[in-house]
Length: 563
Image (cartoon, rainbow, N blue to C red; front, side, top):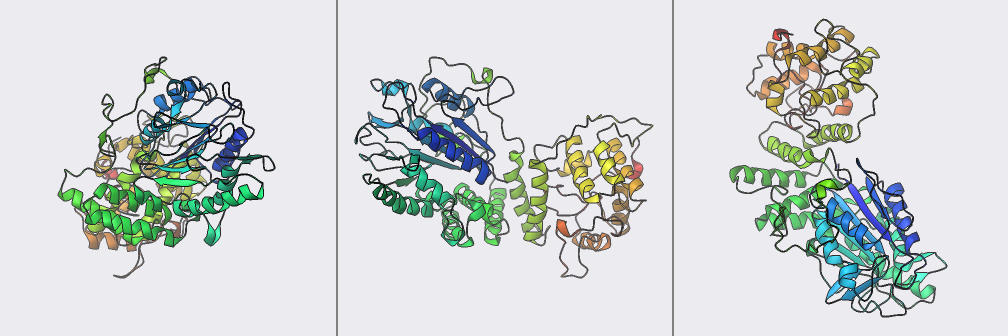
């Protein structure tokens, strides 16, 4: 599932500029929306009294000064933290200034007489955020707040490649605060738009922009303030069609994305096409057009290995951003520079690395006829992905080497599995089996097992798992049961669609008949009334691409394992 992160900054008390009244409350309101309503995974708040950001070493201070913010961006966004399908938002409420043809964010200690060395340029912010790995970077700049009317002269005239930027007002305008509301006009209208649901929601870049351009001037007029006109710059232009809030988007919102993706395929821009198809899948994971698009792209890459999937090259809009190569990058020097490896850093996304690889594998397997129904696969994938990214906490201390004389040992890594099986909670035990097997194979971060991982899986561990299932199901469920059934049907290591269909029908994973569908994971029978061999059901063998095929096909024969 896509991750959502936000960086939120609000400054009231400037040391060298006119004080603002509601910039900090704007930032705090945005932080609450990101966390409580939009359910973001990470929100980093920088205000005068925001708490430090905890890390594995020392905490990161959050006072919105030049040194602290610049170091935060430099250290934490030198290497990708997020994945292509993720979203990164940046909100700033405070003074903005244009100097020497660049837009700057004025920080608490910025010297207006030396802006270039004491403020942070929007160019620098966008360059760092684009290194995050997220394809969708959104800037919300409630700046141009100046003493009087035109201290922000020309602010917002630059274009920033690869990001979506919402400005609170046009160049030479002022972004006004509304005392009656306790917020800036732009932020108040922004939050109103983000909270809309139903047909008139602001889930897309285009609709949010339309809402801001209509409602912000109206709000200013109602409160006796001069007009301010928010505006948008989306670079490249196709980002105008991006979906900001997938959970409330309408199906019709993905039509422009589909058209852009098809256009990119025609023009052989496979990286762009893949980005757009993934954006479609974020809204509707069963969309056949998107699945077919990814399948076509995968096949073309298989036929031409020189075509790399996005993320395998260190490029941002054609520029090499590999460590040590600063061509085209804006990296102002910092007099307090410390090697990034020595500084505290925010936590990386632990389980995101397998998402795109899994989807590409799914599409390729689909084209080969190994799965029959896209929607079935997507349901299975979603179930497993949720288990990987949201594991249940446990206080059990696992022993990786259970005793030979006691393979079913409550003090071993299988303690939780045994507890679940003993309670006849077969659904939770099935998911726990998958989790434990990923741990044994050291594939937790990837979230799925390769065929070679299954073939090399330690016999000792395999037999321990099998014995637990056999014991608590009275011999009805287990890997060895599945292997016996598979072999009795003539199954071998070679792929045979007829055998697999027969296997699915025998153990109850597939409805009978040539046209019978494979079951959704949620439709499986997690009780003793299920057919023999029904459980455990492998969710992520072969990159989640085989569906519910059990463990019997891949793993070494349990009966011949010597432990």
